[in-house]
Amino acid sequence: MVEVIWHARGGQGAFTAARCLGAAAALSAGHSALAFPTFGPERRGAPMRAFTKISDAPIGDRSAVQKADFVVYLDETLLEDGWESELKEGGLVLLNTRRAIDDPRIVAVDADGISQAVLKRPIPNTVFLGVIPALTDVVNLADIQEGICATMPAKLHEKNLAIVEAAYGQVAEREIAGARSFVEGEQPAVEVTQSLNEKDPLFNLAAEILVEGDSLADGEERSANGRDF
Image (cartoon, rainbow, N blue to C red; front, side, top):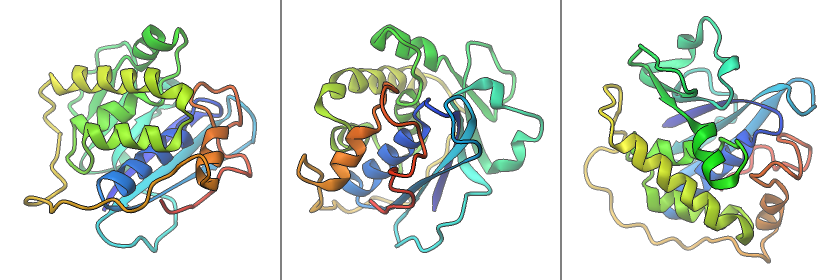
């Protein structure tokens, strides 16, 4: 199982990204996926976490992820002492920062800068949807693109597709020592029989939680907590 922990502040879109990654894995790559949030005070700016689990088998464990393959920090101020305790062996931290980090376990990405260039606002969540397929073969860039188109309203597709392509290209050019392959051998082609459209209630729910942060805060009661894709 591939597990991802997303650290963010309320309103930064961590749960949106977690669900989009789950949709990419389930709808396009043919895996089972689960995404859900957990948070403290329900207010914008408060620290919160979201989780994505991806497996080739049905996922029965809906508990919070304790150790992950990827731990994503949308806000670098949330990276505290002891961060390594959340990593599986060989796992990576993906950190939104402009600083150079001298630790092979941390992949530094100027996610605010990438999103600022496209959206004219620093909204870093979908940047990391482009980073993850550059570091693992559990999903590829095309899967992520399908996940975005399936879970976000059409008006957000163009800019967010541009963001993930830019992030993917930037990280794919690096030599990341900790990058891992999670898929053993060649995977058979999977016919995707489930898709989301504007008549699907999950699509309508996803459309409410806009990546640009001008709708619901992450983790609000209408956020489909624990829904399988």
